[in-house]
Amino acid sequence: MRATETPLTFPKEARRPPAIRHHPVGAKRMRILRLKFFQPERTAKLQNDILMFQQHKDESLYNAWNRFKDLLRKVRHHGLDLWLQVQIFYDHVNYATQMAIDYAADDRLRKLRLEVT
Picture 1 (cartoon, helix red, strand yellow):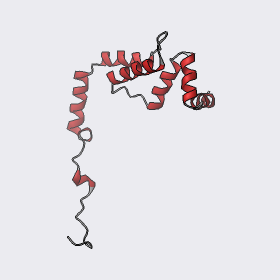
Picture 2 (cartoon, rainbow, N blue to C red):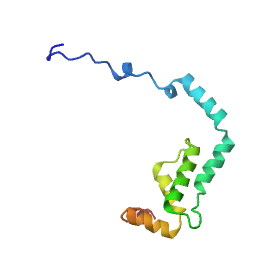
Picture 3 (cartoon, rainbow, N blue to C red):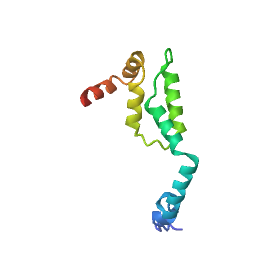
Picture 4 (cartoon, one colour):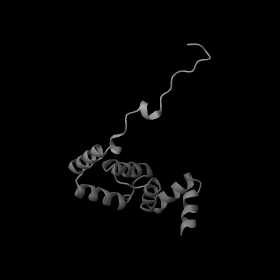
């Protein structure tokens, strides 16, 4: 190939197969699999565990955060936005941990909370 020639390019659609979730049959299969492996009762219980998360007495920030992330991993289809995950965690840790988070975040979280309320 000469330097002046350009290689053949294909549209992006031709390079990648379409995602399963955009295909009507694939979407139906995904719903069936989700209901089979993630029963609604189990999902509701795990989502409730996430929403009612509470830091244990004498639990470090590191351990509380890892426990919260483990809850999120148990139900990957929780549908909670990142900002809501952070807010749930921040609201359900003790005051000393909140101060440590504020210090690490240069007080940005507390300022955001004051603007919202």
